Image (tube, helix red, strand yellow):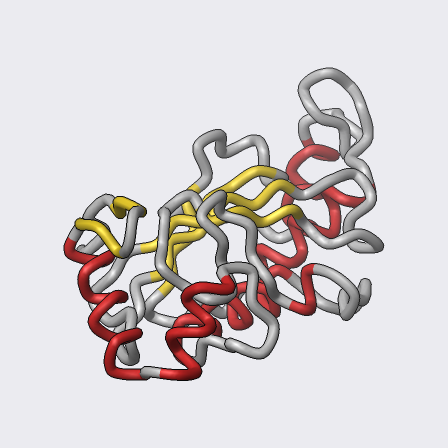
Length: 185
């Protein structure tokens, strides 16, 4: 975890250093950078989630690690990459699951089917909203709006087999012809 300063404190520090809210290159922060800074400062992460910044100066690209503590995916560790574009908050961040997972709402390429990342996105939504939405997908997979149609069909027709397939995928192994790397924490 990293400690982040509030926008007010950052502005104050830069002004006292002779700057004018400029970065290292003398550029003003974009609207997307200012908004993501605010979103991150106001994050209220559940205990099952952690954010990792590979570059502490780049708040527009980060990873979210979700480790569900209940449901089908309990004990798993799932990594999502967030790429926040310059259109944020008018455009949603691009979110991909980097962990291959047997899930009706996440396909094998890591695309995520979450309504607030698509048609239901509104600028008032925040990164926190997305994190809670992703966490909810692990508690209540939605077979009604699938990206992985095979997993959705199994969930709808044979819940016990779905649970066995999830456990097999978490431990590392084949579900049908697809191999899943171990992702238990």
